[in-house]
Amino acid sequence: MKIYFLALLFVCVPLASSQTPEQAQSSDAGPTILSRTELEVPAETPTGSRGDYFNFFAYGDFTYNSYEPFATIAGESAGKEGYDAGVGVNLLHYYQTGVLSLNYTGGYRGYSGLNSDPASNIIQDLSLGFNKLLTRHLTFTFRETAGWTPGGWIPQPVTTPEFTLGLNLIAVRTETSLTSVGLVYQLSRRLSLQVGGDFSEVRYKPSIDYTGFFGGDASLGLSYRFTKRTTLSATANYQYFSFLQSRGTSSTDGAYLSLSHLFGTRIEAGVSGGALRTSFDSTSAQVFGSTLLIYSGSATTYSPFASGRFSISGRKTSFTFSGGETVSAGNGIFLTSKMIYASGSLYYAATRKWSFGLNGGYQRLVSIGGGTTGPGEYVSGSADYKMTRHLGIRASGNYTTYETVTVFKGNSYYNATLGFFFTSADRPLSTIF
View 1: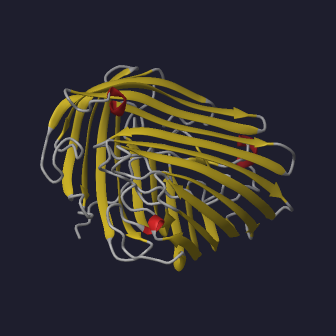
View 2: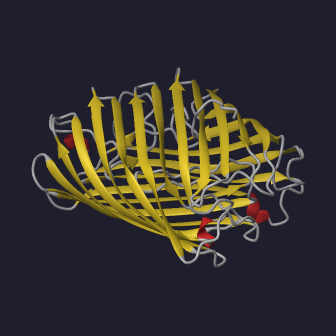
View 3: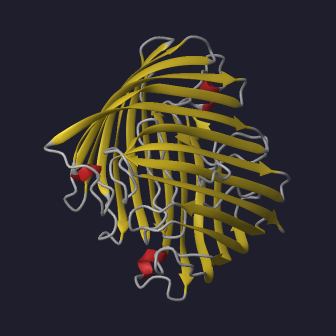
């Protein structure tokens, strides 16, 4: 198997906890890694301040994609030239008792004859988060992430301790939505209780070739902070997947322990480990187009759960690496699957004019019924230069490879872009996608 640089194509962002800025700076503040109280926020690019942040941006570029998986016979090359254009907004606002963040990008990929349905060329990416201290001891958390991604792009994967979305790199369009809510109750100075749930929906186009799903999960956890920097948590969770097109259901329950540590003020690390039990029927264990095993009724398997994360956040640099093994709803070709993944992202603002990003990752899906495996790897990079306070130029590229799965032939392709961007804030632009 060819292994390429590991990285992840999503917004390079630090994490903010459910604490207010004043609480976060107190001597009582502890690590929040692998906790539901984490909240994604825009990268606070180097200004030396931690206040509210707003940025409106627009972009346009020339694009060349060496291979559109859905545009021709699988396994053959069909390079296309075109353009990408869109607008977006980054917002971070601190309340006295909470914090709100919003990242949105909307755009369009224009290729001659790219898709017969123009809606399949639309690009959308949303991340909305809200944390609020309801009482002295009770915190409410909410997060909504959604995406609408054309084929040939790497969709933004959604990964939390409770939910992991596999990537489909071949579908004409991927539509994703994840709604998360949670409550954190501070039982004592060191002990806290977390309860939460997620609802997810994933659809692929064309639906006749790929299978989407509705899903949900619930979790209950208890955390104990040994020191200002070290926290141990125990969590029990339950997941349920209902596949579209009458392709069955599956459920997973399990438990895991998490240990997190804060190294100084800018370096965090956390690991989780436990076990999962998955119940499924023959339909929900399929690789689309191939039934691996025939079951009478349902079957049950046991598998490990593991998750790890390491992050560094500095004035000019942001780095995140994560990986693990879990059970997911698959990627539309695989259904209920064991999933092994690793990803990383690096962002560097060299000056107020120059900034760079490097991202990529690896995933391998194995049907819960056993047998077939489907690995894939991807890497991307970008360089931005601001010519004026608000106008700049961008060059980016990515490389993706995936292997043959039943009738879906493996291939490798690259994408290259060159264009401009406009920002209302006089800061480096960390990323568009």
